[in-house]
Length: 121
Image (cartoon, rainbow, N blue to C red; front, side):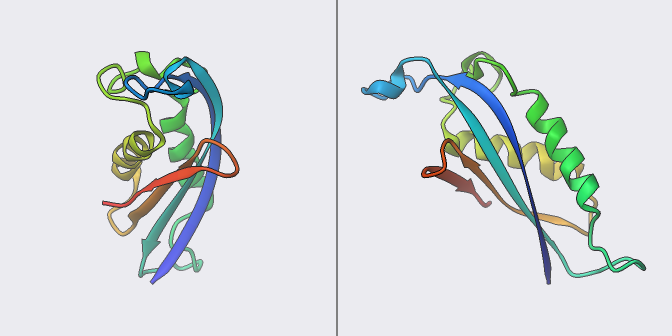
């Protein structure tokens, strides 16, 4: 089994409703998003998936979040835009963009260099 990882960034504001702390106020992050995919077959050039294609798919998903107030972007207008929920959001959208031979294994969303959350179905 082979695994590939890529990362990208987006900037956005959010607030965690019901948090009972400083994060309940609107604040922002430069979110780092790392994704890991796996597959068992390589093409004739020795690639499971071109990094360029994986980066493009991730960038398309993140473009809908970049420079927004996440609480106004569906589905975060109904559920908190926590790092955990953002990771699931990215997973659900990016997995649809991948070839059938490639499986999305994990999405990790970092709010800072010290704090991140991952989603694996």
